Length: 153
Image 1 (cartoon, one colour):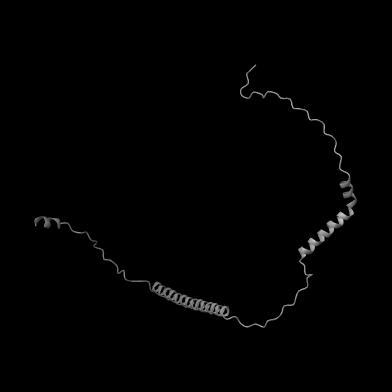
Image 2: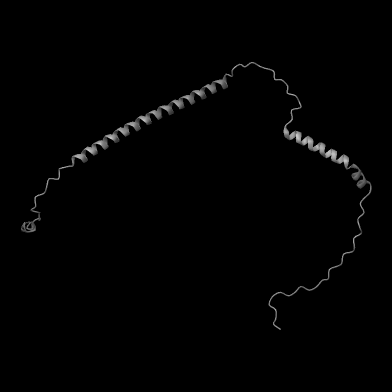
């Protein structure tokens, strides 16, 4: 017990200067903080309203799509009765641009052959004479050159 009493002999040092009251606040600052808090609260309320409106629009859109799909499914099961109209046969001369170009190229080719027919007949009737080929010289065989290090002379 004597040890416990000797341990308590040191005391804490405290300042003797009186402390001013820290609870005094700037009234302008307090008013500004309250105004800021009010603006934030209003902004949160506006945002919540906008989110609610967006959710409502999205729900309506989903409902409309579901109704559209249901209507399409019902039409697929019960196709509506339509007036049967006999289609009028289209004339056979309706050709596309590509088909017209193909026909034109065939006609041009035939005309070109007609005008060159004399040359073609002449070439077919008289075979072309080719000059006799001279016998090719046989290559001279030589030993391949040695590769590698050449001696210094």
